[in-house]
Image: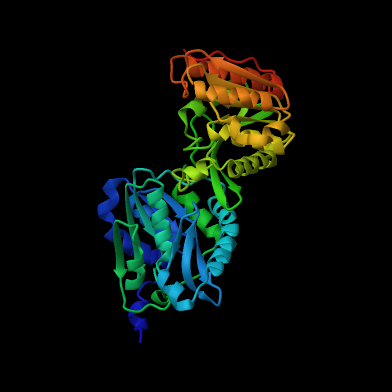
Length: 444
């Protein structure tokens, strides 16, 4: 039988966090970032972040519960789509593939909205190359902790440390994605985490948001250039973006890039800055989650990318500061095909520009695109040039093809990207009714 007098050794989560922080002081010099598991892990993580002088964020996970025994976790999913399964539970509980599929669908349906609410619309802090300390208030099955650690690993963390006040041996064994685990107590039995605490109140969304705001008031990713980092629910995932709306802007261009991070793409940022100086709002968007970026199937899943682009468009239209703004798309790579598919499905899209893109991936949907489309291709990119010529001929509405002489696929040659930006600016300004503001000359 479990010795409850020994297990109930923490006064509350704050006490546990302070004690755990003393064991983690050695990490203070590694510029760590602290992730608290939702929900109860965040108060513990807040104490650790405060002690180490580290930024604080939340790792949003949902357990996948056995249908006939909902108190048993057969797995967990994280906000980026990472899924972890507990194989022994599958065998013991006779879990079927249908059970797993239904549970996954059910939890994914609420995960995206839950993530946005907890962060108040802020994006996940950038953890690439950092030591990440994943914190929970206790660990029994280990599935949620493993999902969070695997997510951190997939987002580029240099080192992942799992820190919990109390854990079961079985739970720790399930956590494979952490480089190190730190636990103050590892009892042979622990029926429930609450048994380790004298005071164990429920943690609500308001408390999590308050702790995040108090710990890192600038963690929303405020951009010195005036941009706003945002989170956008799109089906079962949350997309990250950078939104900027110049004063008086009457149009917004949404950038679609099918591989890597469109939000941080130097080429997209350069073009966006030119549009912004012309009085056009921009939304730089990551159409793939970090977990999907290395998946070639996802990169070329144009229908999925198109649906996510439409979700981002709906998000722009719901913003009070963008009410009534004309919407255009700027697509690159497979994002060009997604932009044209989305424009075919939404006749209110006012214009599309493709930079070295693959409009051919829109297939028969090209014949349904009625808005003006500008295709920009490098003169030294013959294969893509041929695909764009065929796509231009298949488009139903106004279509133009501009060839930038001597430019290769990525427009890396001196002045090539400047020509792309100027062509896009003029196309959008004329066709979106974007602004009466005269374009400002580029800084020398």
